[in-house]
Amino acid sequence: MALPHRTPGVGLTLALLLTLACSAAPADDGPAPAAPPPPTPTPTPTPTPAASDARVHLTIVHTNDLHAHLENFAAVSQIEKNQRARSKNTLLLDGGDCITGTAVSTVFQGTPIFEVMNLMGYDAGTIGNHEFDHGWKKVHEFVDVAKHPVLCANAKDPDGKPFGDAPWKLLELGGVKIGVIGMITENVPTLTTAKASAGCTFEPYIDAARRLVPEVRKQADIVVLLTHCGVEADAAVAGSVTGIDLIVGGHSHTKLDRALVSPNGTRTVQAWEYGKAVGIIDFDWDLKEKRIEDFKYRLEQVEGRDLPKDPVVQKAVDAWQAKVASLDEVIGKTQAALSKKLLRPLLERIYKEALGADFGFQNTGGIRETIKAGDISVTDIVAVLPFDNTLVKIRLKGDQVPEFNRRELGDKFDPAKEYVFATNSYVGDQREKYFRAKDAPVEDMKVSMREAVVQWVRKHGGFIESGKPLPEPDDRTDPR
Image 1 (cartoon, rainbow, N blue to C red):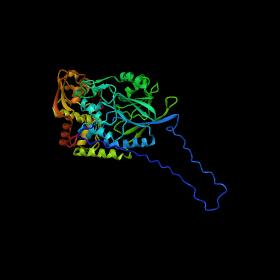
Image 2: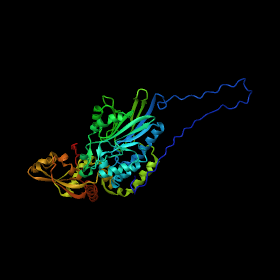
Image 3: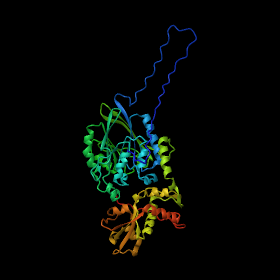
Image 4: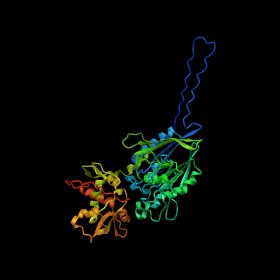
């Protein structure tokens, strides 16, 4: 059920008009011939794979890691509808992480994204780790809002209730039974704040695949894993678990221009991120041999192209964007584009100053967008930092201080001293991951991380005071 304050999704009907033109010879005013010429036979069309008695043609259109980038949704939807017009046996699947990344998602906590997706005709989706960004209870709400089945086989809430509508679903196209199994990475607890997934359990992906694939295989012609686990994990499962025809993945934001094929024949695909591209799979199902034939895969580029847009979806997108238009307020400028590697030291400086700490620390995975040269708006800051984290202080002993920060202090570094790091609450919860300091004291300062940055940029007219040079790009990598 939709939340009470939302407008119900508007259904979209697509009509395919087929016109058959027939022509007749004009009447002859001259004498009638002894016998009329035989009528010209109507040519019989060559059977297509979809009409063949031996094969059924199927199409799977897929997205993943949309991260609330509504600017691409209408084009993605139109691509899918064009495919359905060409091939009636079409599925639209999504590999999770639908939310978090834009102002609409942040302000309204993700729900509008599923409401817009309801207009796009998805047949099934799975859950990503970012669906937990507003807490595990919100995941159940997203499942209720979504009109398509949300599938997840390996995650349960603290009460033991599975996330999703079902672990898997049998979808039928052209008489072909396709079993779709949903999977999420078991690493969710290390990818969220502690409270967001507290008490939830996540079965290892490979264990869940070994448990379910044989069961689904008995009932389905084709077995598809719809996953949010990353291309490396997908490759491991593809090579270890037999009986999987196709893995439609997400999580690693991988741009696969061609399908990966495991030694046992499992194909893996993934369609990049943010709706910048759409994956399109075409193949035939051989009814006699019970196998996939003529498999073809491509990415349809969306980013950088002026593509037709689904008007119903675009109308909904425009309405939601209008609700956050006030965030387009300009609060600063930048002469140069700010990459993620440039933003990291700039953010760390702001955190350090905001809390009066010895060091600032910003995890690279928490920087979600770059900033173009020119005006800086609040919307830009929300895109860079979409998470509702607070600033915290972490106290580290000298031997726990990262080498990078030790070099920064040089001869002034004292291994016997305690140092204070200003960072976000996610890093505070995951301090063992980032600092190998599980028991280090953490103090939540109850200051919004994003608001601290907005205020700093507003006060100084940008990320850098006038006349000061940009810092060197930061090439540090975070632990995985």
